[in-house]
Structure formats: structure tokens, C-alpha cells
Image (cartoon, rainbow, N blue to C red):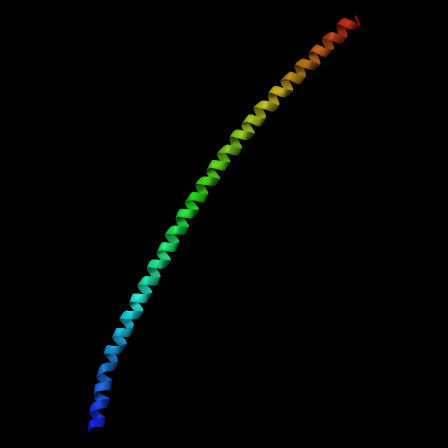
Length: 95
């Protein structure tokens, strides 16, 4: 009879133990979910910061290209003026 009572007590306590284990597991899963969310938020923040850096660098490249184009055009204009002045000088030397 004691054996049956012990088995009955054991059987009754199994759902309680399972529930406790389930709560612990749920708590661990919740912690893992929160940790994953935190990592995701961090990654999103880093991605946003990198995107801003890329946009800033693109703006800088555009500005440098514009400056380079302007400088190149100025040099070409000076070269044309120099060539014209050389032609005029040659014309004056050899009428």
C-alpha cells in the first residue's frame, strides 16, 4: 500500500515538476528573445550609421568630382588662351 501511495504521489507531482520546468524554459526563451532583439537593434543602429557614412562619402566624392571638373575646365581654357597667344606671337614674328 505504501508503494502505491508513493507512486500516486510521484504521479501527482510530475505535472507540477513539468510545469516548473516549462516556466524555466519559457523564462530562458524570453531572455534569449530579448537578447536577440537587443543584438538586432544594435545591428540596425550600426547599419544606419554605416549608411550615413556612405551617404556622406558619396556627397564628398560628388563635391570632389565637381571641383575636379571645374579645375579641368579652367586648365583647358588657360591652355586655349596660351595656344591663341602663341599663335599671335608667331604671327607677329613672321608676318
